[in-house]
Image 1: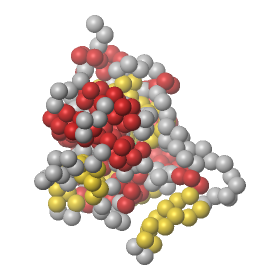
Image 2 (image 1 turned 135 degrees about the vertical axis):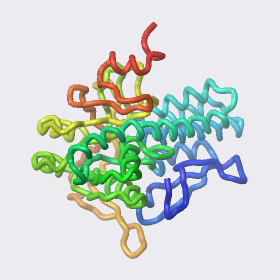
Image 3 (image 1 turned 90 degrees about the vertical axis):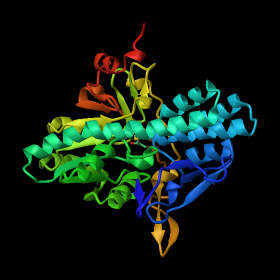
Image 4 (image 1 turned 180 degrees about the vertical axis):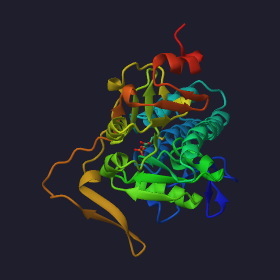
Length: 351
Ligand code: MRU
C-alpha cells in the first residue's frame, strides 16, 4: 500500500544486503514512520513479542524471515523455531510459517513465498468481499455503506492489502461510497493508531469510536456490515480475534447486522475443533493501567489507574460460529461450519 505516495510492504529484505530484514516499526505509528533493521532471529523474536510488528499474517511472515536469518547464520533451526514460537501464542500463522520453514530446503525462497502468498491471498479476499459491499451499496442508492471494524486487520497486520480492509480498499477504489467506523481497540489502540492511519493514507472516510459505541450505532441502523479479521479460526468456524470482537458479534446478531470475518487460509487451525481450545494471550497489566501518546514530537506514557489496582489484559476472545454470517477467504466466501470450510479447502479434509 502507499505511504505518502510510495509503495510499501510491512516487511522486506534490504535491497543491497540480503542479511538484513527491514520492517515498519508499528510502535511509532501514526506519528512517526520508522523502518527497523533486523539481523538475527533473536531480534525478530523481540520485534514480534514487543509488537514492533503484529497482526496474524505479518507475524507469520516475520517468523518466515526470522527462520531465514537463523539459517544464514548457521544457527540450530529447532532452537530458532522455539525462540520464535514462544513470542505470541494466539495467531496460528506463526506456527504455520515456522513449520513450513523447517521443512524447506531454500529458506530465502520460502520466506519470500510466505510473504508473497500473504499479500496475494489478501488481494483476493478484497475481490471476494468487494461484492458484499457492492450489494449493500446497491440497496442504499448512493448513501455511504457503513462498515464497522475492530482492531487492525489492515495491511499493517499482513504483508499488504489486509484482510478486513481489503474489501474496503477495493470498494473505495471502485468508487463505492464507503465509510468505516473504527473501534479504538483498547488497550493498545490498534484501531485509533493503525487502522485510522491506514484508511487516512488511502483516503477512505472513517470515524474513530470508543470501543463500547458499536452496539449503540447498530441499534440506530448506522452499521451495514461488521468486517473483522482473525488470529486463529477453527476448521469448524469459531473465530479468535482481538478482545472485544465477541461483544460486537453479539450486538450484530441482536440487530440483524451481517458479521463477516476475513481471513487467509493460513489463519485456519486445521487441528482444532472447538474455539474454547484456542490459546488466548495474556499481556502485561501496564497496557491497561497506562497509556502512551505523543506530545510535542515526543512519545509520553501516563498512568490512568490507581497505582495499587490490579489489572487483567486478555489479548483475544473467541466468537462462536453461530454469531458469524460468513468467512471471506482467498477462495471465496464460505459458511462458518466444518462442512462449508472443508468443501472450500478439501486438501485439509480428513482422508
Ligand atoms: O495483538 P495484535 O495487534 O497482533 O492483534 C491483531 C488482531 O487482533 C487482528 O484483528 C488479527 O490479527 C486479525 S488480522 C491479521
